[in-house]
Image 1: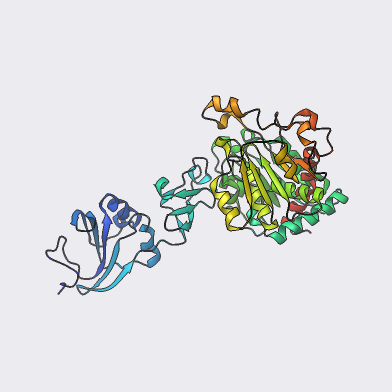
Image 2: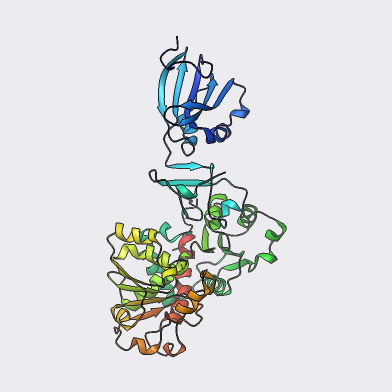
Length: 155
Length: 303
C-alpha cells in the first residue's frame, strides 16, 4: 500500500515505480517539464498543476513512471523549484527522498542579463558559476557579469 | 582552455604577473630579438582599435614574428554571418597565437574553448583588457621602484571604466591604499569595494578632486568621463569640469608621484600638465610594447 506518502485523498494517480517531483511552484511546472526534457521520453508521465497545497497555496506535481534521475540531472531544476521534493517510488513505497541542491556550476537554463555577452550573440550554451546560494548570485564566466536573483531570466 | 592564454587579469597569479613584468624589463633593455622567428601571430580586430593593434603588431615585428589578420570586422567574413567559433577555428589552422579584440563581452573566453592555440584578449567590450592592466602595473613598478603599499588615486569614471577595475584587481596582491574620486553617477561599483573589504585593502571615496587628495598620491590614475554615461545631461554639465587635472594642482604633490592615463585623453588632463615631469601617460603607452612582447613570448612558451 502507498499510505505512507499520501495524506487524505490522492490528487494524482499513485505510481508503482518511478520518481515523484512534488511542491513545484505552479507557475514553473511546465518549465520544469521542459528542462527535464520530459516531452521526449516514452515513459508514462502524469502532470498535475494548481493542486491545493497547505504550504504553497497551489503547487505542481510530476510523476514519471520507471524513471530515476541522476542527481546532476535533477539539480537542473534547482533554480525553478528550490523547495521541490523528490520521492523515489519502488513498489508503491517511497524508498528515498531527495532534496534538490543547486550545483556550484551549471550549463544552460539561465540567459545572461548582459545583451552584449557572447552567449546572447553566438550559437552556444551559456554556463554559470554559483557565487552564492542565498541570496542567489550567479556569475557568467564569459562576460564576467554577476546576476542576482531578481534579474534572473530563464532561457 | 589553453594554459597559456590571457583573457582576464585574474588568469594570472601574483607570481605570473611578477614574471611577466621581469620579462618586460628584459625586452625594454633589448626590444629587438628574433625569438618569434618562424612564428605567425594573428591579430583579429573585430572592433577597430588602431592604438592597441599597432602596439601588438610592433611587439611581434620587433621579435621577428609575422602578422596576419584584419583591423576591422567589415573586412572579415563575420559580416557574412560567420560565427566567432568558425573564424577562430579557421585562423587556428594558420597561426600560432591569436590576439583578438571584440565588441562582445566574453568573446575571448569563448575563443579559448574552441581552439588549442593561445588567445590573448586585446579587449572584449566593456569587460577585460588585461594587457593594458599589465602595462599599468609595469609603469607603476618602473616609476615607483615597487608595487607594494602604494597610495593609488583613481579619478573619473570608476563605474564603467574597465581599466580601473582590472588594475584594482591586479593590485589586490600588493597591499595598496585606494582613493576613489568620482561623481555620484560614476562611483566604484559595490562588488569591487566588497573585494577590497574582503582583502583588507583600505579605500576612501570622495567626490571632490583637489590638491589635498593629490598630495596623498603615489599614483594618480586619471580616466575620461564620457557624456554618454549620463542619463541626466544637466548632471553631466555640472560635473564635467570637476575632474580635470591642471598643473597648478600638482604643486604640493609628492616627488615620486606619477600621472597615468589609459589614453585616449580628451580634456581630463590639461595640456599644461604634459610638460610636468610627473606626467607619465605617454611613456606608459610605450611600456605597452615591452609588456606585450613579454606576454606573447610567454604565451608561446618561448621565454
